[in-house]
Image (cartoon, rainbow, N blue to C red):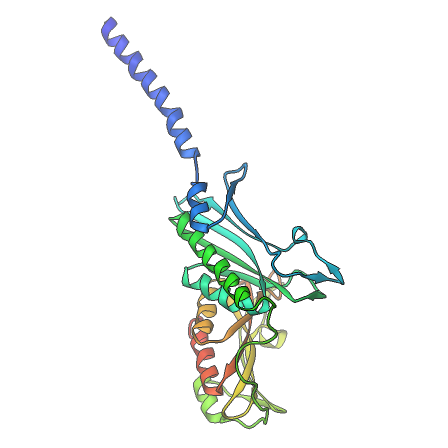
Length: 302
């Protein structure tokens, strides 16, 4: 009897000892050293276990409202990593980009399977103009996500090493605006009728949502549109995509595959169902090439 009792006590003690060890192991969280190595910069661990990396953009002086802005006043790039319930890792971040850095940084993020979740300004009267590219990611490996962030930041660094001063336009020639286009060809590609407004050829693709119990659409501003300015051989296109949440990344990737630049990603309204996001874009090429890129993005939507 005593032997059985001793065995039972020993087993119970062993279990009680093992439980805290298991909890400690589970609470260890992300490997901040591994993230540091993958990102090429020091990582810090927050009180809640989130691992963060940061980069102050002090390489280009920025004035806002005539004041030379200290980097600590909002010119910082960062990325944060957190364990999630499914056993993977969640990434959120924000990267400071000057205008000529937006496309290279975005392409690097896409190449490493990161999501672009916002692109907009945080200041006005800033010189040079500063934008902020918000990123997200989800995976099983924090190091892979960190490599993606590093690739973005490396792409930005490469732009500045090649040209210390931020550029003032995209590469490419400027088209002569005549207002004469091969309308039939563009309409065929976009599968839509156009409207010629002065020298601009415009297409509109309506979407629908509900707000305050009422359905609304293009006449209230909920639409995708494209405006071509140039001539039959060469044009620029400006436009806006209205996208539900699941459509944002496919549309963005399709436009970039077509060489069309993403210039803003944000919302225009609140409280609508489903929620819509808006992506503003700019392209410079032959009208037909631009139209095929827009068509490819449209085809990703429901």
